[in-house]
Length: 277
Image (cartoon, rainbow, N blue to C red; front, top):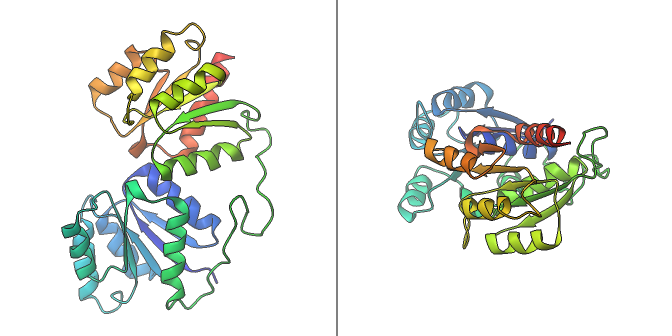
């Protein structure tokens, strides 16, 4: 029987990523978007492990942990916190409430999440922990192959992203679509690649070291060689002025990381490439 993992995360993109990763690893995973429903599911579903964000609507992660500690029926369930904050005071507060591990969102990758999950479940879970999968392997052990008829097979996609977690996830998702991939972690590197390569589409973060995404976009659209390449801005920035600036500079689409899923990103890529064909 598969071990059960409850994910309490209001970031749509990250929640989707975690659920897909856990399910592909052989776990029974359930997602809730706010602390109140997370606590209710914890009591009703009795998972073997909970992955918990701190900043949540309805009830924050600390309140969930405090309520959990007072309820003997769920207090033994181990918790791994996944949070934007890595301040020692925040980490210490979580650990004082019984948290088994603490991950800072900007500093972990999917494999680290799975390692932490396996470690906690191996310490006392009643079910069998799924076998460790090698990179690029499905649960059964068969090689992962690109999905047929996706419309992206052979298309060259470049993404400029310095977040290690997202880079790994995007690479896996696009590889499954049969794409040829180009990746840069900062602006100067992206521009060097574009001097030699001609991708069919570019996924571009805005907050990057060195040259930011807006400046990269401006240079792409002012260059005769690259100006026809559709660019999707994929960023944590979501203010009206940011979206308008992106569109003015020539972005074909502006997607906010916290509000889109991986499948929606792929659908947007397909739509733009179809339109550009």
